[in-house]
Image (cartoon, rainbow, N blue to C red; front, side, top):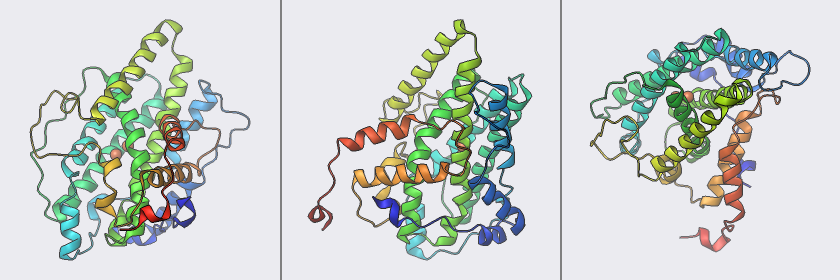
Length: 330
Ligand SMILES: [Fe+2]
Ligand SMILES: [Fe+2]
């Protein structure tokens, strides 16, 4: 297993200096994100008031107050800068955060329950902060973006929230592994990679919130609405599957963008772009699984976890042969 050689995440102190964050606040936020346990005794049954309060409290208490607008972006050499500029992700990354923000905010604003509303609204706000981080990076390194589309509120807020939530579950799972590879490869300076550590952990926390909202919602909606809801969940997975294999590109927002080619599947095809480590698909999947477990390990184990991607990938690994040593040369 590759897990044994993964370095622990860097401390947030250096990052704190570069984001204008108070070092004590950064250390507290980092600690909370990796050691959060509800003081509620007993099981946290999905659908119960105790479960809802624990989840939403977790989200509030693990908030990281980093400030993206004053990040001091490191100077890159020509080779590093070219590598960064040529990643085929910048337009789609910025736009994905813009869409996630409006979709989460739209869903939150329609909720009558103040606890869920506050948590999902904060999630939407954090997506906007991710977009600011990416936009600032793009500006700092002179990366040219396509003109951004408008981000109108979705017509069906629940559908949009489901698609965004499951999409984050897929992308974050692979991003955890790629990020670990980027940390180990030295392809980019550690100061640049470290900047995204809180963003990565934040995405873990987002899909933790989503998985628990989903578990809570399933237990609390009336049975006659449950059937329609499960059909929407299934449709969201089908939609995302199509999108990932390129059949539904542009279908999502109806914008029909025909700009620079972007990579919807970068998270599974981008190992060569972030690292010079020769790694098989199976090893990459094992790394993603190990990183997924590590990032979730710090949250109360009574909370639900996203299970679909880890289960599918564990199953797929059983059918992938381990590379023999001689496969790894050349
Ligand atoms: Fe995000
Ligand atoms: Fe997110």
